[in-house]
Image 1 (cartoon, rainbow, N blue to C red):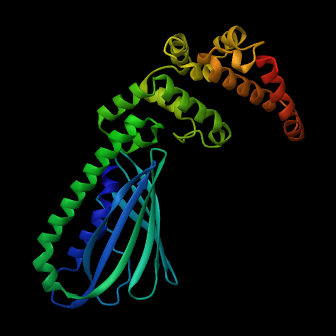
Image 2 (image 1 turned 90 degrees about the vertical axis):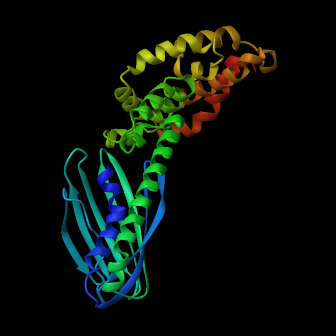
Image 3 (image 1 turned 30 degrees about the horizontal axis):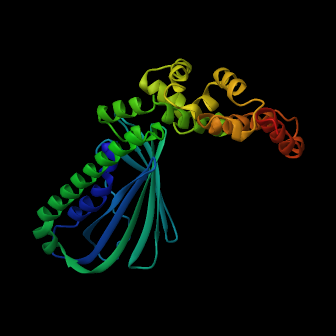
Length: 323
């Protein structure tokens, strides 16, 4: 992944040095690039380059194990594909649109380990330059490129720490290589709240995940358990045992059906809402809602689902609250 991140810098600095020799007057351009992946955004970075007059080919340079191929030009649109080999193989494609003679925009989409990274570029012509001028500033530009790379890497580290603590899904781990982030994430998702959130997300994504089983965000709990080395059902069982004592009744309502039915029978059934112990009121409402949704999902036709939802919900609530 580090090799892909460097493209943001190599595309600017590398092209600058390619035109740094000689004294032919050229065009000075500012290239701004940014990146998004797995819900995280890298701050935009800018660099200035000197291009030969009239050259409008997008300045892209890759590392040794990356190959650019299938380059095409159709009117003002240029496209190409890229493939990187090695520890973290990457496949990608790009498209650049030239908006007149002094501006272009483009995007590169890179896929690695089931995650997609989107890098956006924008070029703006600033004026004139020459090879001699750029030769004198080459070292300065390399130093600036390295500085920006360090800033970007530090930002990535900070983002990884935040995403690990939030534990909203395993997708970010494709970009975050610090073992400490994975440990933080794995510890977090074994708590009642975060386990429940991932479980609910996985249930909502059931249809999507069936069509794209390799996407980490489609089945976040299943993939997280595999990454972190625990069994989903065994972990759920352990959390159910401690949920009531920990006051995590919402967890029981959604993740522990047998336990939830027992609590509902003892604390909810046959009682009006105001007669239910305050501790169990939210649980009883959540349990009744879950029961109504479960009955809705078992309806035979879409029309039955729509027609019967109100009555089923009322029946579930009435059975619990004696209304």
